[in-house]
Image (tube, rainbow, N blue to C red; front, side):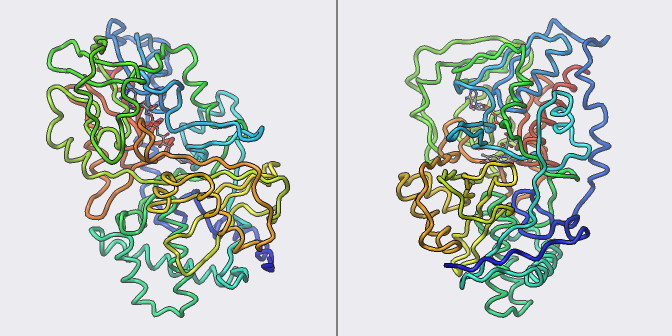
Amino acid sequence: MIIKKKLIKQNEERKKENLIGKVFSKRITRKKFLVDSLILSLGGLFLGNCKSSNNVKKDKRIIVIGAGISGLAAAYTLNNAGYEVIVLEARNRIGGRIKTINFNGFKMDAGASWIHGTTNNPLYAFTQENNITTIATYADPSYLYDVDGSEITYDDWKEVEKNLEYLCDKAYDYPEKSLEEVSDIVEHQLSLSDRMRRLYYGAVRTEYEIPDGGDGKELSSIVLISNDSFPGDNVLFPDGMEKVTAALAKGLDIRLNRFVTKINYESDSIEIFYTDSSNVKDKISPYSNGDFSSLSNEKMVKADIVIVTLPVGVLKRNIVRFVPELPSYKVEAIERITTGSMNKVFLYFEKSFWPDDGYFFEYFKEDYENMMVFESFSTMGIKNILLAFLAGKQSRMAEKEDIPTVKELVMNELKSMFGTSIPEPKDIYKTSWYTDPFALGSYPHIPPGSNLSFADKIAEPIDNRVFFVGDSTTSDYLSTAHGAYISGISAANKIINL
Ligand SMILES: Cc1cc2nc3c(=O)[nH]c(=O)nc-3n(C[C@H](O)[C@H](O)[C@H](O)COP(=O)(O)OP(=O)(O)OC[C@H]3O[C@@H](n4cnc5c(N)ncnc54)[C@H](O)[C@@H]3O)c2cc1C
């Protein structure tokens, strides 16, 4: 049985710095850049909430493709401004990659769960205006275990943090290289002991690879220096993040099970073709391009303006055809942003066996490429559930494997931390975002050799008639729910001000 020593309790200063194992309250060690100016650039964001405006062109019909948070935010803003808006959604539910499940009586978020940063964050402001309950979560205390089962001390971790900071500084010298390459360069320079080397690579895994949904070779070193969060707390939703999408969706004309196959924007009146999602669902895979040539029963709606919220994984595979084809700069931009794979495995136990006050648990093994991170909800009063985060190759593999295999995988990690006599879970639920036909990836990331400017290229509207929003269209807040929300509102405001 592993002896679990509680991490030395933090003093107030350390609490503020939030030093320990800051998983998913992403990128604490990264350089904070331009946060203030980004906030300024959001000026006028709420314009669309005004009920009326002199330059509102209510005769324009707008179709939004996708009822994720970006599409709903756009539709909500336009609807409030008096426009006729229809949302076409392929799934039989709203929310997209915000999906709350009922897991043994508890509301758990299978997709996004946190708002990253509450200060000046428009999405957080929306939750407050709509009385949606949130709860701040921290990373301290978290329990980090070494291969021999001993707990990693605060002093050890401070040393790891120092090395990570050096790594972040070095990333500026190698923006074209992968996270793995720069991590290796820095590791050589630091001449670390075997133990520190293991902790260093483990921390790269838990602080960057897992939150960014990729292995080191799949990610640009830019992940080390980009900051997509707002300042302030990271908050979760005790009643599920679906409360946000439900509040946005109220009163909107949303048509479910409508899978859009083609957008013809050749003439002033844009034609949007769609079919019942059951006709295509099984034909879509991340491993091949969809072939819908045999579809016969498509329907069509017309619009003056279309807002496309398709995830970049979907855009990449040409599943939805654009007529005429998208301009080459946009095709290139879509190619230069990749979709990551990060999946969650929820475990329900009859009784908890982990420290009650811990937020995260991590096991720093030699094979750091297969590390995972566990989150506990005990501090929220949910004592029986642990959640494992898997990323990259391991996450894609877990999607393919059956539940018993995935259970063994995560239980082995837990046994390494808490001993072999821990109980078996009573229930298990795993997500499959990489193969989800309407997401084809968890969230976007920047591959080696690419950069964030391609997100802004995806965002550029075509002739102010075809707009692109979503979590791959914002260089400031790539791959976040708040980024998607802000992109939806910004596009709606552009339309209102045309
Ligand atoms: C496991 C996981 C954890 C995450 N954790 C966080 C987190 O804690 N905090 C955070 O900020 N972000 C997190 N994210 C990212 C966040 O979920 C996304 O950035 C955000 O939800 C994206 O919203 P969106 O509107 O851009 O895309 P989506 O939510 O994907 O919406 C696009 C919509 O388009 C629909 N669609 C697709 N194809 C078609 C078609 N052909 N026709 C019609 N409709 C179509 C889809 O069904 C979907 O509803 C997480 C994501 C995942 C997967």
